[in-house]
Image (cartoon, rainbow, N blue to C red; front, side, top):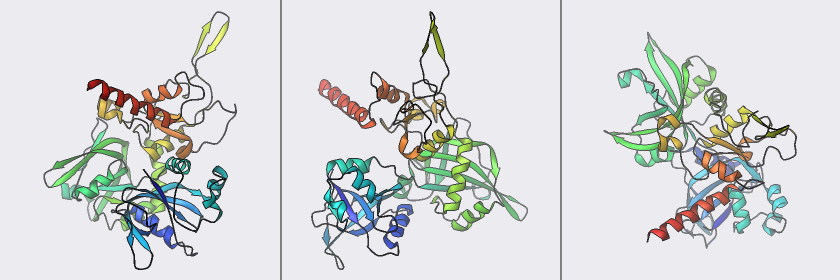
Length: 386
């Protein structure tokens, strides 16, 4: 897949930066952009803007070949626009790729060298977070909580829009009339993976993190801002755009994301085995910050980023949310405490892939190496079955 870097405007009003950010939060996630004459449908696209960061801030996919435009020589539509969790600064590109001459001027669109493209593909992308509202008056009954760990929700949005929601975080709020007021509660969140027709609506379902007790939010300032943004929940299943609301939900998510046990060298344990007069420490003793683990899972979800398996789809509700968190740099490196960035230093992996990352390999394998191992194994199986 060819990787194309497109350029934002050079003005100082942050117009293209704001445009890309709002596009990434929109339902269509589509924008038309100036491009190279050679650009083709299917090209992977990255957006560089000079203000306010001088950084690569978003990615997307070319939806059509380049065509002559009115204001610019060539333009093309770019879809699946996705905001990066952290901008990739121009200086970072200069430091990592000193021989790449584009970074010296950064004034034109260009196709990316393979090593630069791989570097950008490894950058964490921000998930879009959505709000779902259950009205007892409309549905005819209060919100029912499923004890299995799986959550389903009905929506009348068109299929194309609903499919974009899959894999993202959806926050469930419920409302019940109490006298002249509606009492609102936050039930929790879930990550929809499945889509099915249910009468005239679509049912999305996936593993959930429901709060042990619904949280009363009626008079909370952040909730009132959400209520205004969502037009009193008249927009249906809709993206959350308020930074204040997203920050509050992020902190609430930490309360409901369980820290699951794990028994690999990268996970905490104090277990020791005594052999004769010596002590064999079978796992390290470096402290793992459970807040960092929670932040990683809130960012990426609980699907393995290597084999792309959600264990709940294989083993059922009993495995909902079961996932390991892998340090891309082993905890023991350096032998001392250091800051961890959950979005760049940690990734969720299933127990099998986590074992392969570490098995007879020090330092651990790179995630891409294990992905390639899986791909080659599938090819060999297909060849053997012919």
